[in-house]
Length: 232
Length: 119
Image (cartoon, rainbow over all chains, first blue to last red):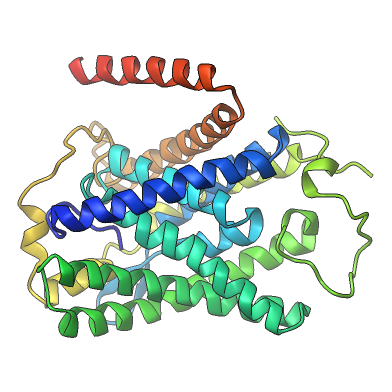
């Protein structure tokens, strides 16, 4: 759902750019507080994985394709603010290096996929996870629902921006965008739950959002950053 | 117990590079969700009128001098994945530095970018 140049009005682009820039500035501050020098390579490898996975378009119904977004995936691993920064870096490189998404629409793309995808997606994830009283099953339900919703909400936001820009009326674009992305979101939910469960099985300490009420593995109560030995 | 991150980082990066190199050439080339909606709802030509950034070296995930489409996509993905890895780490490291060092970094970066623009 990378929006190209020309779809959105300059007013919408400026407004979303301001919101995205503000969110990123605050995100840098939060990441700075919470992350140690040793956790930086984790951000690098997560961003690299998301970029590579985003290249792999899978076909959905009706001659349409979709690809992984990774907003909920990265926010469950590293927290929503680090996830927002990762999505921003990926989107900037895709825009400047690969002409994927317009430079004028960069603010809107960061808004749809970073602010709504990462921050909004993580909000929904934590809400459902808390409702489930932090059970293992609840963790995966929350993961699947929030990653599906992150796609549908991002696409709906794009439809609203298109309507506000006078490109296409909301009554036509919103059902089309939400409907198509409801299918793409299923792929997102499958990839996100599979990838997170793989990491949970091998390195549970790296999934910072997973805090089961009855720990299945010994936890020493320290934060991830403190038990990190190696790095680059 | 100390758990090393190094192994995980290299395994993760290796897996990502393999994805980019061997799966991306076989990705579906159908229009994505937004492109399809733009086509069917009749506003796709609005996105083809102009582009604000014409200097993308790997436009549409291909390397201009590699004619084979699949090889071209695979190597652009490889370069992009490596680049993102180092850029993200670089940005992460810079945010940990003092304000003076950040300003210095921004100045060097803008010099580098403007040099490339003129070249």
